[in-house]
Image (cartoon, rainbow, N blue to C red; front, side, top):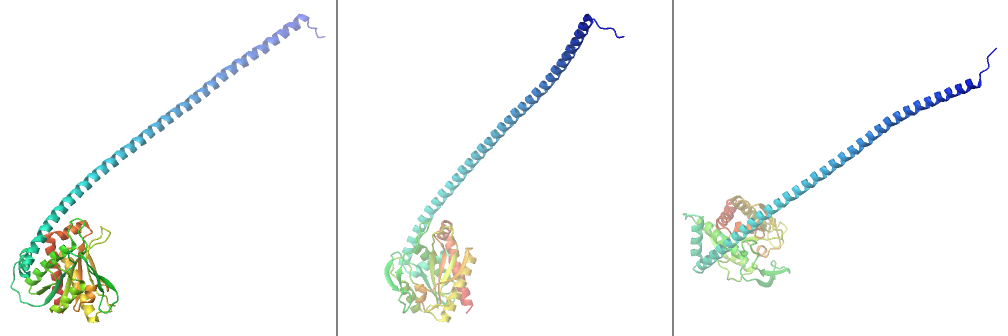
Length: 352
């Protein structure tokens, strides 16, 4: 038979059970605190690491921005220095061009006055002077007759004249032409300088030369010039001109003459004029090195439509281009231009 527990025993057992439960709770609490402490420390470390990464990333970004800004400033300073150097070079070039233009203009004015005084003494004296500047005297045999027209003149003739025989189209009789962009030389002055040199070269080679003018004090329309050639016994007519356009970058030489569809000239005269213009432009560009712009057909040229012998205009270069303008104003280059035109005339007559 089971012995019944006393009240005291029961109380002791309950106390022991309570103490056991408290001990277990205490152990669990301690374990929880330890675990919580470790977890918290881990989270704090993770947060600190992330904060450190953010600080480092921000610092790197700031450094990158500073480097980029420094690079921009350096590039801007370099560009500013380059621009200043370019402006200085351009200023030096401009001043040099202006000085050269002033010197060339003064020299050309003196040369023009000298030629004018010589022309007043007679064509032969002018020819002798020009020959002395270009080529030594040679023993020659007179052969072909050439008419040279120095295009334009000092004073414009504003009256109108027919563009061609029987034509209702009216054009201004003559103008003073264009002028040098850099040299300040007038076209009518340049044309006469080269025409006189060409006269000298041709005469040294045995040609007979007819000049439509030997100074600037004339009043000759384009028809007048053509009629001088027609009545002179000349076999060909070469008209000396210089060009100009709005685009100052354009350079080169060309010849003008009739097209195959010209209604005022015979087919034979057209063909011979084209051949003359082609021979001259090719020889001219070979002698001078100028950009060869070829032969250009133009049926509106009064001076061609009224001429009864092969005729061509040579546009020696563009006075609107500063470099080519100064080149054409140079005495040595003028000699080469005259030689080149004369070589073309030689080639034309050699082909007959």
